[in-house]
Image 1 (tube, one colour):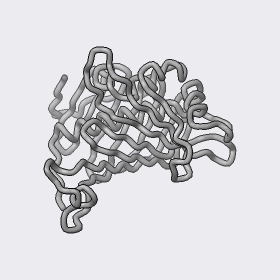
Image 2: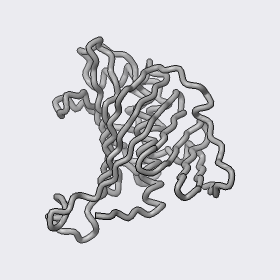
Image 3: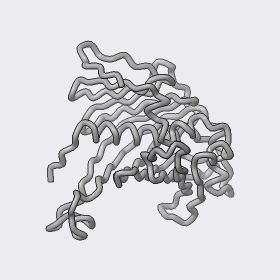
Image 4: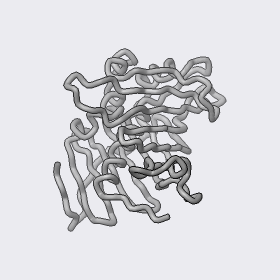
Length: 248
């Protein structure tokens, strides 16, 4: 089945997923095996400074409007759900800097330099630039990347330990609280899965993100290097010559 994605949907998915994943990953640090998910998250906020990893991302779109139950479960006539799989590399440095390089099947780059969020689509030769605080205001990135402790995070998110939720990982769920101004959240929930090593140190293993449109994204990480030394230039972005730059 060929899947058609509008530019607006793709940009929304990439911005949301990148913001969520980067924000949660900015919290990584060492923790003892006895800690539950909330204890681990609290320690992440205190101790993680940088990191890098490989990732695979699977985005599952909700059933088309008017689709029946059979379509929602897997597609009418046995057709698979509408999915898109990508892979690449990821790096972050607190506070507020990260980079996603999508390498397959389409080349895209997302860079947050601390002031501006850049999205480069190589196929379209187009760059979209937004003020970072504005672009990530409704994602976990804005909060988790800057929150000093769990108490600060809980001002805007309801957090719960998801012990026993499977995959051999330690899970924490974050659900955005209603905005004071009545505006809608872009996210329904984010679940972060942590894998605890034999030395008691965690690695970010998976993120499960559900947005307000019913799109679910599952990101799995491998070869995660915590507190890696990353050159500052990695979080700088210069639009390629000839690229169409759209500022929002």
